[in-house]
Amino acid sequence: MWNLKSWQGRFVPHPLAATERLRAYAGWCNAVEGNTTFYATPSRETVQTWAAQTGADFRFVIKLPKRITHERRLVGADEDLRVFLDAIEPLGPRTHALWIQLPGSFSPADTTSLAEFLTHLPRIHRYAVEVRHPAFFDDPAATTMLEKALAPVAAEWVPFDTTALFRSPPTSDAERDAWTKKPRMPLRTLALTDRPIVRYLGRDDPERTFEGWRHWVDAVTEWLREGRSPTVFVHTPDNADAPGLARRFHDEVRARLPQLEPLPQPAPVGPDTLF
Image (cartoon, rainbow, N blue to C red; front, top):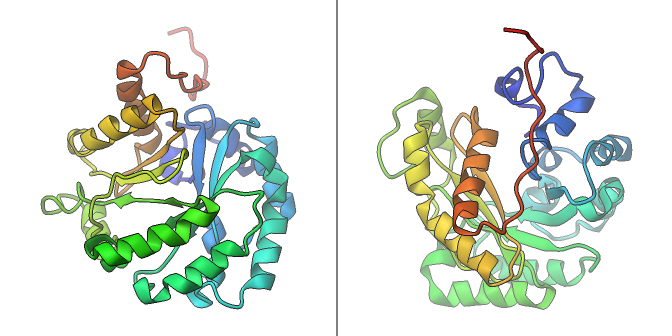
């Protein structure tokens, strides 16, 4: 997420070497979704550059490769998992959670495969599972079955909130594209562990994005009061303003909880000038 072209010159300096963009992003936000790992396992050398650009308290939520989750559907993936875990080892404590995003076809009938997969994972990591089959949300028995599968390893259930996107018809090309690609997910605001993770998709209109996240400001504030440590990722269809929106969300929560630590102060993006 830190290499988005539309951020260059706005949130990160331009030109800027690819090996320095994460460092610049980390001046805006203290967590990032590791989406690229879904498509291919990175080399250890690449991951070492990620670690070198971030502090020990920076949070990576790293997605397991699709080879494991979508192609093998969590079965017979021991070697792929071993290679992946070895590659991300240089992140050390920065690995906040390993993110197991499952395809929409992964149904309650597959829950046993998930439970067995989770049971054999190394306990040195925390795990977070994102499901997209509607039955997990609509069928109480399926919901309970999934929660029971997650409980033995204290894995979190990651909600992907797309309700704001689908609340009214799209008004931009990016929103129209998102309507064809993003899942229509039911709203779920229940945390299972002390480290909830939220993925929120707003609109290209900032005001609609602010309106759509009100329930998350309420939920995150309450989680913090309970002593939990939530991580929230804010998206829009074009993601052009995502770092600024994430900081706005944090500001709204901090207005209710002034004791919440501030986000880092980003470095100036443009050149120094006298005028």
